[in-house]
Image (cartoon, rainbow, N blue to C red; front, side, top):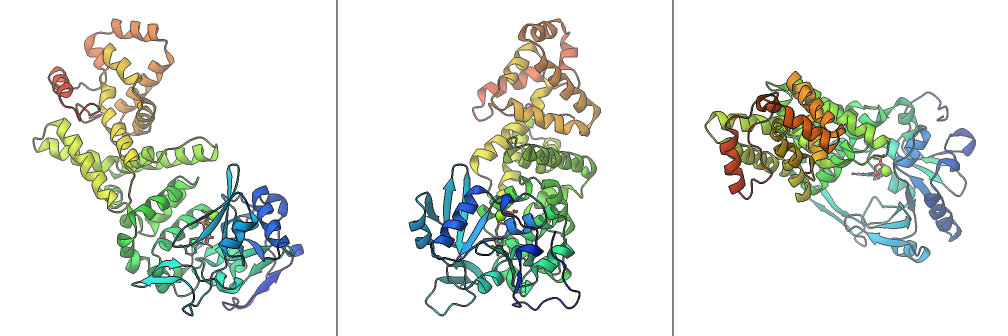
Length: 458
Ligand code: ATP
Ligand code: MG
Protein backbone atom coordinates (compact mmCIF):
# COMPACT_ATOMS: atom_id res chain seq x y z
CA UNK A 1 0.00 0.00 0.00
CA UNK A 2 1.01 3.58 -0.46
CA UNK A 3 2.45 5.25 2.64
CA UNK A 4 0.42 7.40 4.94
CA UNK A 5 0.81 10.99 4.14
CA UNK A 6 0.20 13.69 6.68
CA UNK A 7 -2.86 15.75 6.04
CA UNK A 8 -2.15 19.29 5.02
CA UNK A 9 -1.58 21.29 1.93
CA UNK A 10 -0.49 19.45 -1.21
CA UNK A 11 3.28 19.54 -1.60
CA UNK A 12 4.54 22.39 -3.73
CA UNK A 13 5.67 21.32 -7.16
CA UNK A 14 9.36 20.78 -6.70
CA UNK A 15 9.15 19.75 -3.01
CA UNK A 16 11.12 16.54 -3.20
CA UNK A 17 10.01 13.60 -1.02
CA UNK A 18 11.97 10.44 -0.50
CA UNK A 19 9.83 7.52 0.62
CA UNK A 20 11.98 4.79 2.18
CA UNK A 21 11.52 1.10 1.33
CA UNK A 22 9.78 0.44 4.65
CA UNK A 23 7.04 2.93 3.78
CA UNK A 24 5.99 1.83 0.33
CA UNK A 25 4.76 -1.39 -1.24
CA UNK A 26 6.91 -1.58 -4.37
CA UNK A 27 8.85 -4.82 -4.25
CA UNK A 28 11.71 -5.89 -6.52
CA UNK A 29 9.96 -9.25 -6.90
CA UNK A 30 7.30 -7.66 -9.09
CA UNK A 31 9.79 -5.98 -11.43
CA UNK A 32 10.55 -7.87 -14.65
CA UNK A 33 13.92 -9.61 -14.90
CA UNK A 34 14.88 -7.50 -17.91
CA UNK A 35 14.18 -4.23 -16.14
CA UNK A 36 16.06 -5.38 -13.02
CA UNK A 37 19.08 -6.31 -15.10
CA UNK A 38 19.09 -2.90 -16.77
CA UNK A 39 18.72 -1.10 -13.44
CA UNK A 40 21.55 -3.05 -11.79
CA UNK A 41 23.91 -2.82 -14.73
CA UNK A 42 23.49 0.97 -14.92
CA UNK A 43 23.91 1.26 -11.16
CA UNK A 44 27.08 -0.87 -11.16
CA UNK A 45 28.50 1.31 -13.93
CA UNK A 46 28.10 4.30 -11.62
CA UNK A 47 24.93 5.80 -13.13
CA UNK A 48 21.71 6.79 -11.47
CA UNK A 49 19.04 4.24 -12.43
CA UNK A 50 15.34 4.40 -11.61
CA UNK A 51 12.19 2.64 -12.63
CA UNK A 52 9.75 5.33 -13.71
CA UNK A 53 6.34 6.15 -15.14
CA UNK A 54 3.47 3.72 -15.51
CA UNK A 55 5.40 0.81 -14.00
CA UNK A 56 5.98 2.58 -10.66
CA UNK A 57 2.41 3.86 -10.64
CA UNK A 58 0.92 0.44 -11.41
CA UNK A 59 3.12 -1.45 -8.92
CA UNK A 60 2.21 0.97 -6.12
CA UNK A 61 -1.44 0.38 -6.99
CA UNK A 62 -0.92 -3.38 -6.90
CA UNK A 63 -1.45 -3.78 -10.66
CA UNK A 64 0.71 -5.58 -13.19
CA UNK A 65 2.53 -3.04 -15.39
CA UNK A 66 2.26 -3.31 -19.16
CA UNK A 67 5.89 -2.38 -19.65
CA UNK A 68 8.86 -1.25 -17.58
CA UNK A 69 10.55 2.05 -18.30
CA UNK A 70 13.88 3.08 -16.87
CA UNK A 71 15.23 6.62 -16.43
CA UNK A 72 18.90 7.31 -15.96
CA UNK A 73 21.56 10.00 -16.11
CA UNK A 74 23.48 7.93 -18.65
CA UNK A 75 23.15 9.27 -22.19
CA UNK A 76 21.68 6.96 -24.86
CA UNK A 77 25.20 6.43 -26.23
CA UNK A 78 26.49 5.46 -22.78
CA UNK A 79 23.58 3.06 -22.36
CA UNK A 80 24.48 1.47 -25.66
CA UNK A 81 28.02 0.75 -24.56
CA UNK A 82 26.70 -1.13 -21.52
CA UNK A 83 24.30 -3.46 -23.36
CA UNK A 84 24.99 -5.52 -26.42
CA UNK A 85 21.26 -6.12 -26.93
CA UNK A 86 20.55 -2.40 -27.26
CA UNK A 87 19.37 -0.14 -30.06
CA UNK A 88 18.79 3.59 -30.11
CA UNK A 89 15.46 4.81 -31.42
CA UNK A 90 13.41 7.99 -31.84
CA UNK A 91 14.12 11.47 -33.05
CA UNK A 92 11.56 13.40 -31.06
CA UNK A 93 12.67 11.58 -27.93
CA UNK A 94 15.92 9.73 -28.32
CA UNK A 95 15.72 6.50 -26.35
CA UNK A 96 17.57 3.24 -25.84
CA UNK A 97 15.72 -0.06 -26.17
CA UNK A 98 17.32 -2.99 -24.38
CA UNK A 99 15.95 -6.28 -25.65
CA UNK A 100 15.62 -9.48 -23.62
CA UNK A 101 13.80 -12.02 -25.75
CA UNK A 102 10.20 -10.79 -25.88
CA UNK A 103 10.76 -8.04 -23.35
CA UNK A 104 11.90 -4.57 -24.37
CA UNK A 105 13.04 -2.23 -21.61
CA UNK A 106 12.91 1.41 -22.60
CA UNK A 107 15.75 3.47 -21.16
CA UNK A 108 15.43 7.26 -21.29
CA UNK A 109 17.92 9.86 -20.18
CA UNK A 110 16.64 12.42 -17.63
CA UNK A 111 15.34 15.40 -19.56
CA UNK A 112 16.06 18.95 -18.59
CA UNK A 113 13.54 21.74 -18.09
CA UNK A 114 15.49 24.53 -19.71
CA UNK A 115 17.44 24.75 -22.89
CA UNK A 116 20.54 26.95 -22.71
CA UNK A 117 21.05 26.48 -26.42
CA UNK A 118 23.44 23.58 -26.09
CA UNK A 119 20.71 20.97 -26.17
CA UNK A 120 18.27 19.84 -28.80
CA UNK A 121 14.74 21.03 -28.04
CA UNK A 122 12.40 22.24 -30.69
CA UNK A 123 8.96 23.80 -30.45
CA UNK A 124 6.68 24.68 -33.37
CA UNK A 125 3.70 26.91 -32.49
CA UNK A 126 4.03 25.91 -28.85
CA UNK A 127 4.15 22.26 -29.81
CA UNK A 128 7.01 20.08 -28.70
CA UNK A 129 8.44 18.41 -31.76
CA UNK A 130 11.80 17.39 -30.35
CA UNK A 131 13.18 17.17 -26.85
CA UNK A 132 16.70 15.91 -26.30
CA UNK A 133 17.91 18.27 -23.62
CA UNK A 134 19.26 16.30 -20.69
CA UNK A 135 18.94 17.29 -17.05
CA UNK A 136 18.41 16.23 -13.46
CA UNK A 137 15.85 13.81 -12.07
CA UNK A 138 13.82 16.72 -10.65
CA UNK A 139 13.74 18.37 -14.04
CA UNK A 140 12.82 15.08 -15.63
CA UNK A 141 9.84 14.72 -13.28
CA UNK A 142 8.23 18.04 -14.20
CA UNK A 143 8.43 17.25 -17.90
CA UNK A 144 6.21 14.19 -17.52
CA UNK A 145 2.46 14.37 -18.00
CA UNK A 146 0.62 13.46 -14.77
CA UNK A 147 1.89 13.60 -11.22
CA UNK A 148 1.20 9.86 -10.73
CA UNK A 149 3.41 9.18 -13.76
CA UNK A 150 6.32 11.10 -12.27
CA UNK A 151 7.30 8.72 -9.46
CA UNK A 152 10.74 7.10 -9.49
CA UNK A 153 11.93 3.91 -7.85
CA UNK A 154 15.66 4.21 -7.22
CA UNK A 155 17.58 0.93 -7.47
CA UNK A 156 20.40 2.39 -5.32
CA UNK A 157 18.36 2.29 -2.11
CA UNK A 158 14.87 1.06 -3.16
CA UNK A 159 13.29 4.40 -2.21
CA UNK A 160 10.42 5.97 -4.13
CA UNK A 161 11.16 9.56 -5.15
CA UNK A 162 8.26 11.97 -5.45
CA UNK A 163 9.11 15.41 -6.73
CA UNK A 164 5.59 16.77 -7.28
CA UNK A 165 3.01 15.14 -5.06
CA UNK A 166 2.34 12.07 -7.18
CA UNK A 167 1.98 9.83 -4.11
CA UNK A 168 -0.81 11.93 -2.75
CA UNK A 169 -2.67 11.95 -6.06
CA UNK A 170 -2.22 8.19 -6.26
CA UNK A 171 -3.97 7.87 -2.92
CA UNK A 172 -6.69 10.25 -4.04
CA UNK A 173 -6.98 8.27 -7.27
CA UNK A 174 -6.74 11.45 -9.29
CA UNK A 175 -4.96 12.42 -12.49
CA UNK A 176 -3.41 15.84 -12.25
CA UNK A 177 -1.44 17.32 -15.11
CA UNK A 178 1.92 18.72 -14.05
CA UNK A 179 2.28 22.46 -14.64
CA UNK A 180 -0.12 24.74 -16.47
CA UNK A 181 -2.71 22.52 -18.22
CA UNK A 182 -3.28 24.92 -21.14
CA UNK A 183 0.40 25.09 -21.93
CA UNK A 184 0.96 21.36 -21.48
CA UNK A 185 -1.92 20.49 -23.86
CA UNK A 186 -0.68 23.01 -26.40
CA UNK A 187 2.75 21.39 -26.22
CA UNK A 188 1.19 18.00 -26.84
CA UNK A 189 -2.60 17.65 -27.38
CA UNK A 190 -2.36 13.85 -27.17
CA UNK A 191 -2.03 14.34 -23.41
CA UNK A 192 -5.81 14.88 -23.40
CA UNK A 193 -6.32 11.39 -24.77
CA UNK A 194 -3.79 10.00 -22.31
CA UNK A 195 -5.80 11.56 -19.49
CA UNK A 196 -9.00 9.85 -20.66
CA UNK A 197 -7.23 6.54 -21.28
CA UNK A 198 -5.52 6.44 -17.90
CA UNK A 199 -8.67 7.57 -16.11
CA UNK A 200 -10.51 4.67 -17.73
CA UNK A 201 -7.76 2.16 -17.11
CA UNK A 202 -7.02 3.09 -13.51
CA UNK A 203 -10.56 4.05 -12.52
CA UNK A 204 -9.18 7.48 -11.52
CA UNK A 205 -10.95 10.78 -11.81
CA UNK A 206 -9.42 13.65 -13.73
CA UNK A 207 -8.74 16.61 -11.48
CA UNK A 208 -10.92 19.63 -12.39
CA UNK A 209 -8.21 21.95 -13.72
CA UNK A 210 -6.77 19.07 -15.75
CA UNK A 211 -10.11 18.34 -17.44
CA UNK A 212 -11.27 21.95 -17.77
CA UNK A 213 -9.39 22.78 -21.02
CA UNK A 214 -10.73 19.76 -22.94
CA UNK A 215 -13.69 21.70 -24.36
CA UNK A 216 -11.64 24.68 -25.52
CA UNK A 217 -8.50 22.82 -26.59
CA UNK A 218 -9.98 19.55 -27.83
CA UNK A 219 -9.85 20.89 -31.39
CA UNK A 220 -6.03 20.85 -31.18
CA UNK A 221 -6.39 17.10 -31.67
CA UNK A 222 -7.59 17.83 -35.22
CA UNK A 223 -4.04 18.91 -35.97
CA UNK A 224 -2.33 16.01 -34.19
CA UNK A 225 -0.42 13.55 -36.32
CA UNK A 226 -2.86 10.90 -37.62
CA UNK A 227 -0.12 8.27 -37.35
CA UNK A 228 0.40 9.07 -33.69
CA UNK A 229 -3.36 9.03 -33.13
CA UNK A 230 -3.48 5.55 -34.64
CA UNK A 231 -0.87 4.39 -32.11
CA UNK A 232 -2.79 6.10 -29.35
CA UNK A 233 -6.03 4.45 -30.52
CA UNK A 234 -4.41 1.05 -30.16
CA UNK A 235 -3.39 1.94 -26.62
CA UNK A 236 -6.89 3.20 -25.94
CA UNK A 237 -8.82 0.24 -27.28
CA UNK A 238 -6.45 -2.73 -27.38
CA UNK A 239 -4.73 -2.22 -24.04
CA UNK A 240 -7.14 -4.37 -22.03
CA UNK A 241 -9.26 -1.44 -20.81
CA UNK A 242 -10.92 -0.46 -24.06
CA UNK A 243 -14.46 -0.17 -22.77
CA UNK A 244 -13.48 1.97 -19.80
CA UNK A 245 -11.29 4.16 -22.02
CA UNK A 246 -14.10 4.53 -24.53
CA UNK A 247 -16.50 5.67 -21.82
CA UNK A 248 -13.94 8.16 -20.56
CA UNK A 249 -13.47 9.55 -24.09
CA UNK A 250 -17.21 10.01 -24.38
CA UNK A 251 -17.63 11.51 -20.95
CA UNK A 252 -14.92 14.08 -21.56
CA UNK A 253 -16.16 14.96 -25.05
CA UNK A 254 -13.01 13.67 -26.76
CA UNK A 255 -14.63 10.95 -28.88
CA UNK A 256 -15.97 13.67 -31.17
CA UNK A 257 -12.42 14.86 -31.79
CA UNK A 258 -10.92 11.54 -32.80
CA UNK A 259 -13.85 9.41 -34.00
CA UNK A 260 -16.38 12.04 -35.08
CA UNK A 261 -18.53 9.73 -37.21
CA UNK A 262 -18.79 7.22 -34.37
CA UNK A 263 -19.67 9.94 -31.88
CA UNK A 264 -22.39 11.32 -34.19
CA UNK A 265 -23.86 7.87 -34.80
CA UNK A 266 -24.03 7.33 -31.05
CA UNK A 267 -26.39 10.28 -30.90
CA UNK A 268 -28.27 9.37 -34.06
CA UNK A 269 -31.33 7.41 -35.04
CA UNK A 270 -29.87 3.94 -34.37
CA UNK A 271 -27.81 4.97 -31.36
CA UNK A 272 -29.07 2.37 -28.92
CA UNK A 273 -28.35 -0.68 -31.06
CA UNK A 274 -25.08 0.74 -32.28
CA UNK A 275 -23.98 1.29 -28.70
CA UNK A 276 -24.65 -2.35 -27.92
CA UNK A 277 -22.41 -3.40 -30.83
CA UNK A 278 -19.59 -1.02 -29.90
CA UNK A 279 -19.65 -1.87 -26.21
CA UNK A 280 -19.93 -5.59 -26.83
CA UNK A 281 -16.95 -5.47 -29.18
CA UNK A 282 -14.86 -3.52 -26.69
CA UNK A 283 -15.84 -5.84 -23.83
CA UNK A 284 -14.96 -8.85 -25.93
CA UNK A 285 -11.64 -7.28 -26.97
CA UNK A 286 -10.78 -6.55 -23.33
CA UNK A 287 -11.44 -10.17 -22.40
CA UNK A 288 -9.27 -11.42 -25.24
CA UNK A 289 -6.40 -9.08 -24.37
CA UNK A 290 -6.50 -10.16 -20.75
CA UNK A 291 -6.53 -13.82 -21.78
CA UNK A 292 -3.50 -13.14 -24.03
CA UNK A 293 -5.50 -13.98 -27.16
CA UNK A 294 -4.74 -12.15 -30.41
CA UNK A 295 -6.81 -9.10 -31.34
CA UNK A 296 -6.88 -7.08 -34.53
CA UNK A 297 -7.47 -3.36 -34.87
CA UNK A 298 -9.45 -4.11 -38.05
CA UNK A 299 -12.23 -5.81 -36.14
CA UNK A 300 -12.51 -2.98 -33.67
CA UNK A 301 -12.50 -0.22 -36.29
CA UNK A 302 -15.06 -2.22 -38.29
CA UNK A 303 -17.34 -2.04 -35.25
CA UNK A 304 -16.63 1.62 -34.43
CA UNK A 305 -17.54 2.67 -37.96
CA UNK A 306 -20.31 0.18 -38.70
CA UNK A 307 -23.29 2.44 -38.17
CA UNK A 308 -21.76 5.33 -40.14
CA UNK A 309 -21.03 3.08 -43.12
CA UNK A 310 -24.44 1.45 -42.91
CA UNK A 311 -26.28 4.76 -42.71
CA UNK A 312 -24.40 6.12 -45.71
CA UNK A 313 -25.03 2.96 -47.71
CA UNK A 314 -28.71 3.04 -46.85
CA UNK A 315 -29.02 6.66 -47.91
CA UNK A 316 -27.24 6.01 -51.19
CA UNK A 317 -29.45 3.02 -51.99
CA UNK A 318 -32.54 5.08 -51.24
CA UNK A 319 -31.23 7.72 -53.60
CA UNK A 320 -31.06 5.09 -56.32
CA UNK A 321 -27.45 3.93 -56.23
CA UNK A 322 -26.95 0.28 -56.95
CA UNK A 323 -26.22 -1.58 -53.64
CA UNK A 324 -22.78 -2.81 -54.62
CA UNK A 325 -21.63 0.66 -55.58
CA UNK A 326 -23.35 2.17 -52.55
CA UNK A 327 -21.36 -0.09 -50.21
CA UNK A 328 -18.07 0.57 -51.94
CA UNK A 329 -18.59 4.34 -51.95
CA UNK A 330 -19.75 4.46 -48.34
CA UNK A 331 -16.79 2.33 -47.16
CA UNK A 332 -14.33 4.53 -49.01
CA UNK A 333 -15.93 7.72 -47.72
CA UNK A 334 -16.20 6.62 -44.09
CA UNK A 335 -12.66 5.22 -43.98
CA UNK A 336 -11.33 8.27 -45.83
CA UNK A 337 -12.92 10.66 -43.37
CA UNK A 338 -11.71 8.65 -40.39
CA UNK A 339 -8.17 8.50 -41.77
CA UNK A 340 -7.92 12.27 -41.65
CA UNK A 341 -7.96 11.89 -37.86
CA UNK A 342 -6.51 8.45 -37.30
CA UNK A 343 -4.23 7.00 -39.97
CA UNK A 344 -5.46 3.44 -40.28
CA UNK A 345 -2.77 1.49 -42.18
CA UNK A 346 -3.82 0.08 -45.52
CA UNK A 347 -3.67 -3.56 -44.46
CA UNK A 348 -6.28 -2.81 -41.83
CA UNK A 349 -8.60 -0.76 -44.06
CA UNK A 350 -8.60 -3.67 -46.53
CA UNK A 351 -9.54 -6.06 -43.74
CA UNK A 352 -12.23 -3.69 -42.46
CA UNK A 353 -13.79 -3.47 -45.92
CA UNK A 354 -13.78 -7.23 -46.21
CA UNK A 355 -15.44 -7.70 -42.84
CA UNK A 356 -18.16 -5.21 -43.85
CA UNK A 357 -18.61 -6.53 -47.32
CA UNK A 358 -19.00 -10.12 -46.19
CA UNK A 359 -21.95 -9.27 -43.93
CA UNK A 360 -24.63 -9.41 -46.64
CA UNK A 361 -23.08 -12.56 -48.00
CA UNK A 362 -24.02 -14.44 -44.83
CA UNK A 363 -27.62 -14.14 -46.00
CA UNK A 364 -27.02 -16.32 -49.01
CA UNK A 365 -27.20 -19.89 -47.98
CA UNK A 366 -27.06 -21.91 -51.14
CA UNK A 367 -24.61 -24.78 -51.02
CA UNK A 368 -22.03 -23.22 -53.31
CA UNK A 369 -22.03 -19.86 -51.60
CA UNK A 370 -21.92 -21.30 -48.11
CA UNK A 371 -18.81 -23.36 -48.86
CA UNK A 372 -17.18 -20.50 -50.67
CA UNK A 373 -17.76 -18.21 -47.71
CA UNK A 374 -16.50 -20.78 -45.20
CA UNK A 375 -13.22 -20.94 -47.11
CA UNK A 376 -12.77 -17.19 -47.31
CA UNK A 377 -9.52 -16.15 -45.57
CA UNK A 378 -11.40 -13.47 -43.65
CA UNK A 379 -14.32 -15.73 -42.72
CA UNK A 380 -13.48 -15.93 -39.03
CA UNK A 381 -13.34 -12.18 -38.46
CA UNK A 382 -16.46 -11.56 -40.55
CA UNK A 383 -18.35 -14.30 -38.72
CA UNK A 384 -17.26 -12.96 -35.32
CA UNK A 385 -18.53 -9.60 -36.47
CA UNK A 386 -21.88 -11.11 -37.43
CA UNK A 387 -22.11 -12.61 -33.93
CA UNK A 388 -21.42 -9.16 -32.45
CA UNK A 389 -24.24 -7.79 -34.58
CA UNK A 390 -26.64 -10.30 -33.04
CA UNK A 391 -28.23 -7.59 -30.91
CA UNK A 392 -29.32 -5.68 -34.03
CA UNK A 393 -32.33 -7.92 -34.59
CA UNK A 394 -33.59 -11.44 -33.84
CA UNK A 395 -33.02 -12.22 -37.52
CA UNK A 396 -29.32 -11.40 -37.32
CA UNK A 397 -29.00 -13.40 -34.09
CA UNK A 398 -30.66 -16.34 -35.81
CA UNK A 399 -28.41 -15.97 -38.84
CA UNK A 400 -25.32 -15.94 -36.63
CA UNK A 401 -26.58 -19.07 -34.84
CA UNK A 402 -27.04 -20.78 -38.21
CA UNK A 403 -23.42 -20.08 -39.17
CA UNK A 404 -22.20 -21.23 -35.77
CA UNK A 405 -23.97 -24.50 -36.32
CA UNK A 406 -22.73 -24.74 -39.92
CA UNK A 407 -19.15 -24.67 -38.71
CA UNK A 408 -19.78 -27.46 -36.23
CA UNK A 409 -21.03 -29.81 -38.95
CA UNK A 410 -18.78 -31.98 -41.09
CA UNK A 411 -18.52 -31.15 -44.77
CA UNK A 412 -20.89 -34.03 -45.62
CA UNK A 413 -23.45 -33.15 -42.96
CA UNK A 414 -23.56 -29.52 -44.01
CA UNK A 415 -23.67 -30.47 -47.66
CA UNK A 416 -26.61 -32.77 -46.98
CA UNK A 417 -28.45 -30.16 -44.98
CA UNK A 418 -28.04 -27.55 -47.68
CA UNK A 419 -29.02 -29.95 -50.44
CA UNK A 420 -32.17 -30.95 -48.55
CA UNK A 421 -33.24 -27.44 -47.79
CA UNK A 422 -35.73 -25.84 -50.12
CA UNK A 423 -34.34 -22.80 -51.89
CA UNK A 424 -36.45 -20.30 -49.99
CA UNK A 425 -35.55 -21.82 -46.60
CA UNK A 426 -31.91 -21.88 -47.49
CA UNK A 427 -32.13 -18.18 -48.28
CA UNK A 428 -33.48 -18.07 -44.78
CA UNK A 429 -33.81 -14.99 -42.74
CA UNK A 430 -33.82 -12.23 -45.26
CA UNK A 431 -34.08 -12.70 -48.93
CA UNK A 432 -31.39 -11.18 -51.07
CA UNK A 433 -33.37 -9.67 -53.88
CA UNK A 434 -32.55 -10.19 -57.57
CA UNK A 435 -29.73 -12.44 -56.60
CA UNK A 436 -28.85 -13.94 -59.92
CA UNK A 437 -28.56 -10.71 -61.76
CA UNK A 438 -26.16 -9.29 -59.19
CA UNK A 439 -24.10 -12.44 -59.12
CA UNK A 440 -23.34 -11.98 -62.76
CA UNK A 441 -22.49 -8.38 -62.31
CA UNK A 442 -20.21 -9.26 -59.41
CA UNK A 443 -18.17 -11.65 -61.45
CA UNK A 444 -17.55 -8.95 -63.94
CA UNK A 445 -16.46 -6.31 -61.50
CA UNK A 446 -12.84 -6.82 -60.59
CA UNK A 447 -12.77 -4.64 -57.53
CA UNK A 448 -16.02 -6.11 -56.31
CA UNK A 449 -14.69 -9.62 -55.74
CA UNK A 450 -15.33 -9.27 -52.02
CA UNK A 451 -18.15 -6.77 -52.22
CA UNK A 452 -21.63 -7.20 -50.86
CA UNK A 453 -24.68 -7.80 -53.01
CA UNK A 454 -27.09 -6.10 -50.67
CA UNK A 455 -27.05 -4.15 -47.49
CA UNK A 456 -26.80 -6.73 -44.74
CA UNK A 457 -29.50 -7.74 -42.35
CA UNK A 458 -32.32 -5.53 -43.41
P1 ATP B 1 0.75 2.51 -19.73
O1 ATP B 1 0.27 1.78 -18.54
O2 ATP B 1 -0.28 2.63 -20.77
O3 ATP B 1 2.07 2.04 -20.25
P2 ATP B 1 2.27 4.82 -19.06
O4 ATP B 1 1.98 5.99 -18.17
O5 ATP B 1 3.41 3.95 -18.67
O6 ATP B 1 0.93 4.01 -19.20
P3 ATP B 1 3.71 5.20 -21.51
O7 ATP B 1 3.21 5.62 -22.84
O8 ATP B 1 4.33 3.87 -21.35
O9 ATP B 1 2.48 5.37 -20.53
O10 ATP B 1 4.71 6.34 -21.04
C1 ATP B 1 5.64 6.16 -19.99
C2 ATP B 1 5.84 7.45 -19.21
O11 ATP B 1 6.34 8.47 -20.06
C3 ATP B 1 4.56 8.04 -18.61
O12 ATP B 1 4.23 7.45 -17.39
C4 ATP B 1 4.93 9.49 -18.48
O13 ATP B 1 5.72 9.71 -17.34
C5 ATP B 1 5.78 9.74 -19.70
N1 ATP B 1 4.98 10.21 -20.86
C6 ATP B 1 4.41 9.46 -21.81
N2 ATP B 1 3.77 10.22 -22.72
C7 ATP B 1 3.95 11.49 -22.35
C8 ATP B 1 3.55 12.76 -22.88
N3 ATP B 1 2.82 12.82 -23.98
N4 ATP B 1 3.94 13.87 -22.20
C9 ATP B 1 4.68 13.79 -21.10
N5 ATP B 1 5.08 12.65 -20.54
C10 ATP B 1 4.73 11.49 -21.14
MG1 MG C 1 4.19 2.32 -19.80
